[in-house]
Image (cartoon, rainbow over all chains, first blue to last red; front, side, top):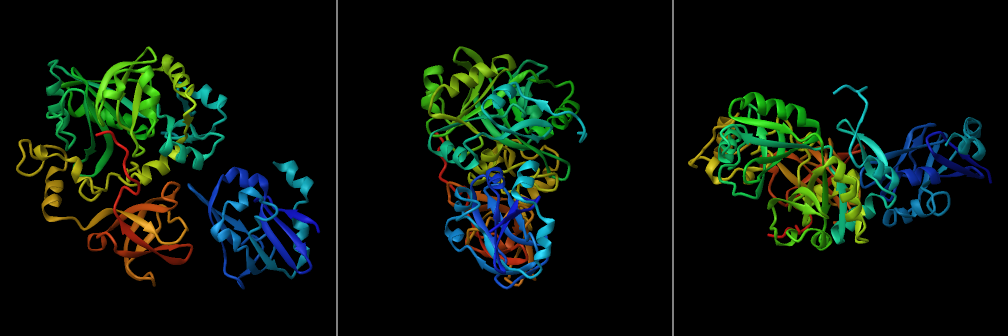
Length: 120
Length: 379
């Protein structure tokens, strides 16, 4: 499975027509300990770059954007009681939501790991 | 202040960098937002042990009477501040506000009677305006000296007194809101037993050249963690303390801001020195007749923080607007969202359920007493 990255520090990993989305380790480090994470309701249709979720630290709320167009399929419910999981394992267990995607061509507009890391 | 003006630095700038602080612009200064421990850890450590804050950006003023009698300086300042300053004993400090002609708040400040002079601490963003206002209004009666070459450190938390005691034998005998001139670690300073966290603690004013030595002496105690502006904000919010520019401004009066407690009997209706400050007519009328809106504490019911500028409604449909949140964050010690804001007076009773607009939804919040945490003051 290939992981793609956005310039706004999300990652997206594709498995069939379902993609998992989270924030990068770099973003998690910048945000500090999270106190609340919430995704849009399951079934919400999103265009590429639409606000899909929000992560909140003590001080600030930050939007998480849909890396490509799709429909919210699931929220990582572990985050409801344990938002710190994002900081502990941002690119693994701390995933935020999954989305059902259609047009995979939009993936070509994203960054691969090397290109993302080169921008940091 | 120009957006392009270079940021000022406090005397502790190099130490902040050495400690790994993330620096941000704040009120024209480059200030530490947080250190490597992070906001959450810094906040919780301050409530449990002791945190050291650099608040050197704040304005420190030395105000003396032309007559030489500190009481004359106090009486002069009373014409700008609705606080009983003439009745403030030597080595005591009080909170208050500067009002404008409409009774609005120009700044909130701390005034201490140091025996022969008044020591006034004002907000960083207001210090030029405050100084100009006080000087022009009271010319001929007082002399204002901006203590430009001085730093201000705050040591806050339940263990602050144990940390400072070996360095300053005078400190443990002080009560909350005492103010003295003494030495800490052999360094001459103004020392007040007060702060902005809701905890016991001290604020220490020192010459710029001594600031780093003093900070290092305090940080040498392993119970002390450096704490940035991020945790300073969440600590003061849990303590129910106002942030000027957010919770108080030129359009809010002390009565609307629920700061009537800061106006002592002598300055209230029927008091020995009733009124006599800008906007007194409005403030006295509001104190007698009530106000249409009030600052209240707000506790959100879920986990989602309700933040500044969120609109408040009486109904879940969001059709009856009743106010707005002015400060909001997740309270690390409360382990829940905490906020304050202004609501229409009829919705200000504790326990009233309101609804805050949050990302297009209306989430319940309850009007709640402040502070959100029990104060740790040494009375």
